[in-house]
Each structure stands twice: as C-alpha cells, then as structure tokens.
Image (cartoon, helix red, strand yellow):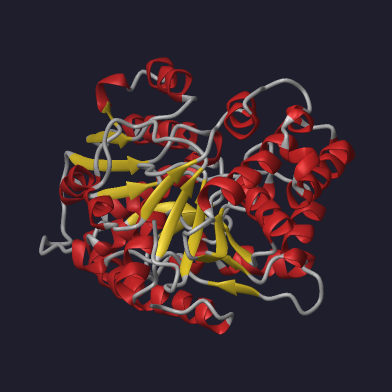
Length: 421
C-alpha cells in the first residue's frame, strides 16, 4: 500500500516482466531513479522462467489483473454467470457501483465482444481492488491495443487521466479510428520512432499531442575494444523473435547465397517464438543446417557475450501480412554500441538509426540477394568496416542514450502534472 500523499503513476503492461521488453523495464527503472513512484499493473503473469538483472533493481509495487473473463467476474462479483453484477447486492444499494455497471453494459452492448467486456471488467478490478489507498493519480499504458483499452476504461470509470505509449504492432494491426479515439481521450500519447509519430499525428485529432521519445539503451553496458578488421570464418548474429515481421527467412536465404559464394561463416540466432519450428526447418531445406546454431532465449548478459563474438549483426525486418512491423529494434542499437556492424532493412524507423552506407547497410525487405551482397561487403571489406564501425558507435551515442530520453519522458510527464516525489 502506497503513502497516499505521494503521487503514484499507475503503469498498465500486457505482462511483467517480459524478456523481450527490456525497454519497458529500463524505462521504469530510470523513472524511479528520477524520483517517479510507480505502481505496475500487469494484465498477466510472466511466462518466462527467468528475467534480466535490471528487473531486480525495480522497486515498484506490482499488481496482477485476472487474465481471463470468468476469473475477473468471479473475483469482482463472486460468480461468472452472465451479467453477474446485477446479482451483486451493490447493484441495488450502491448508486456509484450501479452507475459504473451501467457504463460497462452500455460499452459492452455497443461492441458485443468478449475482449471488450474483459477490458471493461479489468478496469473495474483496478478501480475496486487497486486504486483505493494506492496514491495513483494517473494511468499510463504501454502499447496502444489492450493495455490502453484498459487504461481508457479506468479513466471512464474512475475519472483518472490516462496516457499511453504506442510501439509497433499495437499501432499497425488495429483500425486507425480506434487509435484516434484513444488519442482523443488520452491526456497525451508517446511513441518510440519518428516514423510512428508522423503516422499517429496524421490520425490524431487536431491539437492532441504525440511525443517522440526513443527507447534508447543503457550505453554503460556496451563496450568493445576489438579491431574492426576480421577474417574468415566469420561469426554472424541475429537476436529476434521467430515472427513474420523479423524477416528471418530472408536472412537464411542470404546465408545460403553466402555459402554458395564460398564465404566461410557460422551463424547464431538467439530468440524464440511461435514460428520457430517452421522457420528453422528452412535451414535444412536450404542445406545450411551445419552453418546455423539456434541458441534459444538468453538473458541479456549472455546476449552481450554473443555480441563480443560477432563480426556482423543482421535483421531482415519486413511488414507482415497483418500490418505488423518493428519500430527501431533495440538490438540494432546494442550491436552498434558493441562495434558490431549491422545489415538490416529500410523499413519503419530503422533508417532513423542506421544511415545506409554510413553507419551500416540497409536493403529492401525480402531481397535476400541484396542482403547477401551487403553481408559480404561488411564481412570482407576491412577498409569499409573501419569506416562504418566508428560512425555507428558515434550514431548510437548521439541518438540512443536512454538517460537522455528518460529525462525527456520525465519532462513530458511533468508537463502534464505527473511529478517526481
């Protein structure tokens, strides 16, 4: 229970902690250092068996919402029967409770969606079970889909102001009018790339602010004193989830092309995901299984060790069939900070960090031959490596220092009355 005299920022997350979302845990950790008191509200419990060490530094209280509709209704009303709230004694005896339930009924009846009802009742759970005595005076959600829906509903039921950070998939896989509605109701919105910011401002109501705040990385964690020169056999690295937008099949096809050119290499990939089995099957079809090693999911400390071994880092990011895409993958910035040159694609916010031909090489998505050419140049042209590696290091220090950006984010919060304690 928080001291109610201390303002608290309630932060709604899809899950906490999550291995793939170090940018969120780093943000929380640094906001706390800035003096912002945070209460984490997670929509589900963690699914991974381990976390990054940075999570251990976070002091925020954590509350978990019921993740299933039936469980939510049982915890709120003692029953999961349809419209169980009408059988709750408060429905007749507590006008405020009845008013909230009528709001929930109205919103649910307009959509007739189980997800809509769940998000409404999760907001009621926050109102009933978490807000009292917490000191929470503002709600901020990470990701513009379900966490922001819950944050908006909390505002609807409690009157608390809310804001949200939009990232990537959450922006491009939902109807624009839904995001417009959320921006219109929010105090403000934040996003992590200029590419996203331009899009969100194009659909935002006039006068509603969208702030660009890069995630950045903790530059103190990354260093390398290795020579830019390299020789075969080369070490190539990818850190990514096995999902369509990461373009891993393009990488595999590019590796096949390198192999056919007689370039000796070892490729390692860190990560997991729903598409892992079918994606990894491709290395056998291409006849390069002896060149590829899947390392699974690793804590950040072990990822750092792999950067130290790598001569090249590559991602094949693309726009998925459902519109999903990356923003600026933090692993690109991490590689650049470790003096590992990068080959990636020219989509979304990536060109904001990687300047083609200057601080890395960018190719069109799904063009495995162009990717193979770029890989070969970076691996075999030591003069080019000596040029782009220091440029990349300078670029990431100039643009992606998370201390700078967390100060900017804290300034945004303070602009809207969310102050450090």
